[in-house]
Length: 511
Image (cartoon, rainbow, N blue to C red; front, side, top):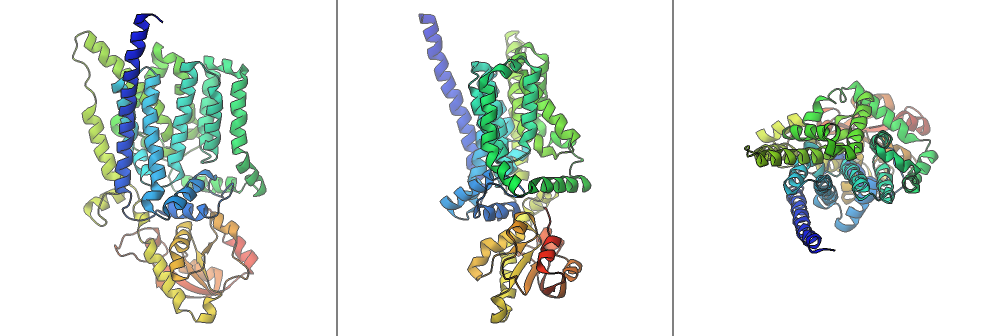
């Protein structure tokens, strides 16, 4: 190696280390923000279901694959039922995705500023902020999409087909976490076919990666076969519900303020320009095609807007690279360069934090403003009080009835709350007709009487021969949520109108 090349290498390495350090610092700041705020309120109804499923590990569940419950089990083992401990993993996943977005920009040729802008653009996306503040499969789904894109970009820049093994492993894990990654897999496959990378169709490494992906997903597939593909029934029911109540109507407009922060619209729009209109973006056009094909598939299938969110980092990375090029060219021509979008990103970060982090005092004007935007925080209020109310009803039963009494809930949040907080009151495990609770059955012998919650008076009368009102669901803050608004009454019921096997079939539901 000659002296010039050696000096160039020596100067390059410290620059890369400094850039990497800055990106890791951004990720750490993002993580710490969540760690210091994630103790507010309480568990979300989805988190309660994940905790319950984590105690019953399996290769599949009605409503999702097994990866996220497995992570929840790890959190329970390490930290117990801790809000911060559970949410640490989703916060860590989102923070890692932020760092990877900066790495994407670097692989596209972006310098320090481009990498920072790309990483921050991801960090302030509303969906990224809120999913770092909750424990749901969305956070891990986001990370796996971004990681697959990063490995694919490395395949191009390093010209190393062996990276298909890593891509296959990540996509297999993605299918073990959330089935909507199948749209991203289709988008990536279309990108391979539409670009010169289709030469890899002759490579054994691509097919080995595909085989590895299938192998990782195989246990869940076998579980689905053994359960008559019940998740397909679940997904069909949920999709039909979302379309019916209008949750999919905002797919296009919500791309502007849910999947990405409004202040980053110029960045991700520039990313599309970079991939399809700039010659330097042509070698990486597969990522542009992956985004467009995934967008089209989700739009045509009437998917939820946030399903596309994990695809935006590939646009943030490219858009930041293009902005940096433009700024450098203007500076070289002695034209006042485009300023670093510090003000835009700062405003976007503050707004996202105010609306998506659990910061607002319950009941304040700020709280009510946030509640107009989304209901994630409302659904974290009142679970201990609900359990305490049920425990009071249970304790009031004659001793001979308590030994056979059961608790029937209408949704998984109620069942998860009873199963989490109920043991301290000596409550039996809840049963329910929803999702995995239905699969677990009602026990033998069948419970009698039943404390019933999550059903209206009309529904209770249709299901049982005798019901009386035994209590009401409230919370100390008076916050309206699903429990206090739709079916607040708690009933004590006896005598199902059908034999238990038929009754159990009748109350099966998806949600």
